[in-house]
Length: 96
Image (cartoon, rainbow, N blue to C red; front, side, top):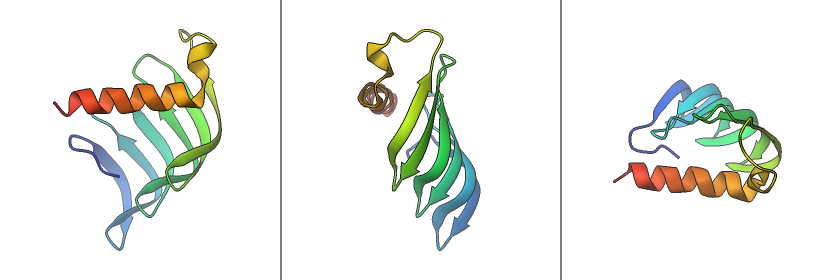
Protein backbone atom coordinates (compact mmCIF):
# COMPACT_ATOMS: atom_id res chain seq x y z
CA UNK A 1 0.00 0.00 0.00
CA UNK A 2 2.95 2.35 -0.40
CA UNK A 3 2.41 5.24 -2.81
CA UNK A 4 5.11 7.17 -4.64
CA UNK A 5 5.97 10.24 -2.60
CA UNK A 6 4.61 8.81 0.65
CA UNK A 7 6.55 8.47 3.90
CA UNK A 8 6.19 5.63 6.41
CA UNK A 9 7.36 5.94 10.01
CA UNK A 10 7.11 2.62 11.80
CA UNK A 11 8.17 -1.00 11.94
CA UNK A 12 8.45 -3.57 9.16
CA UNK A 13 7.86 -7.30 9.60
CA UNK A 14 8.90 -9.55 6.70
CA UNK A 15 9.17 -6.45 4.50
CA UNK A 16 5.62 -5.24 5.26
CA UNK A 17 4.45 -2.24 7.27
CA UNK A 18 3.38 -3.55 10.68
CA UNK A 19 2.38 -2.21 14.14
CA UNK A 20 1.87 1.37 15.35
CA UNK A 21 2.81 3.83 12.64
CA UNK A 22 2.48 7.14 10.86
CA UNK A 23 1.90 7.13 7.12
CA UNK A 24 2.17 10.43 5.25
CA UNK A 25 0.54 10.56 1.81
CA UNK A 26 1.75 12.91 -0.94
CA UNK A 27 -1.63 14.72 -0.70
CA UNK A 28 -0.77 15.97 2.81
CA UNK A 29 -3.13 13.47 4.44
CA UNK A 30 -1.62 11.60 7.39
CA UNK A 31 -2.65 8.24 8.88
CA UNK A 32 -1.76 7.54 12.50
CA UNK A 33 -2.61 4.11 13.85
CA UNK A 34 -2.19 0.40 13.49
CA UNK A 35 -0.87 -1.38 10.39
CA UNK A 36 -0.89 -5.08 9.53
CA UNK A 37 0.45 -6.78 6.40
CA UNK A 38 1.15 -3.36 4.84
CA UNK A 39 -2.45 -2.09 5.29
CA UNK A 40 -4.41 0.05 7.74
CA UNK A 41 -5.70 -2.48 10.26
CA UNK A 42 -7.08 -1.86 13.75
CA UNK A 43 -7.64 1.58 15.21
CA UNK A 44 -6.41 4.54 13.21
CA UNK A 45 -7.07 8.14 12.21
CA UNK A 46 -6.74 9.95 8.90
CA UNK A 47 -5.85 13.63 9.29
CA UNK A 48 -6.68 15.77 6.25
CA UNK A 49 -4.88 19.01 5.29
CA UNK A 50 -8.11 21.03 5.75
CA UNK A 51 -8.23 20.18 9.48
CA UNK A 52 -10.73 17.34 9.19
CA UNK A 53 -10.07 13.92 10.70
CA UNK A 54 -11.54 10.47 10.18
CA UNK A 55 -11.35 8.13 13.19
CA UNK A 56 -11.99 4.51 12.24
CA UNK A 57 -11.61 0.83 12.87
CA UNK A 58 -9.87 -0.65 9.83
CA UNK A 59 -9.79 -4.22 8.49
CA UNK A 60 -7.34 -5.05 5.72
CA UNK A 61 -7.17 -1.46 4.51
CA UNK A 62 -10.92 -0.76 4.63
CA UNK A 63 -12.75 1.30 7.25
CA UNK A 64 -15.47 -0.83 8.84
CA UNK A 65 -16.64 1.74 11.39
CA UNK A 66 -15.74 5.38 11.63
CA UNK A 67 -16.65 8.98 12.24
CA UNK A 68 -15.62 12.15 10.46
CA UNK A 69 -14.95 15.35 12.38
CA UNK A 70 -14.75 18.35 10.11
CA UNK A 71 -15.12 22.09 10.61
CA UNK A 72 -15.99 22.69 6.94
CA UNK A 73 -17.58 19.64 5.29
CA UNK A 74 -21.33 19.42 4.82
CA UNK A 75 -23.45 16.52 6.06
CA UNK A 76 -23.49 14.93 2.59
CA UNK A 77 -19.69 14.96 2.39
CA UNK A 78 -19.34 13.16 5.71
CA UNK A 79 -20.09 9.73 4.24
CA UNK A 80 -17.31 7.12 4.10
CA UNK A 81 -17.76 6.93 0.33
CA UNK A 82 -17.12 10.67 0.02
CA UNK A 83 -13.98 10.45 2.17
CA UNK A 84 -12.66 7.58 0.04
CA UNK A 85 -13.45 9.35 -3.25
CA UNK A 86 -11.82 12.59 -2.12
CA UNK A 87 -8.66 10.83 -0.94
CA UNK A 88 -8.35 8.59 -4.02
CA UNK A 89 -8.91 11.55 -6.36
CA UNK A 90 -6.23 13.61 -4.66
CA UNK A 91 -3.74 10.73 -4.76
CA UNK A 92 -4.42 10.17 -8.46
CA UNK A 93 -3.90 13.86 -9.26
CA UNK A 94 -0.64 14.09 -7.32
CA UNK A 95 0.96 11.19 -9.21
CA UNK A 96 0.86 13.33 -12.32
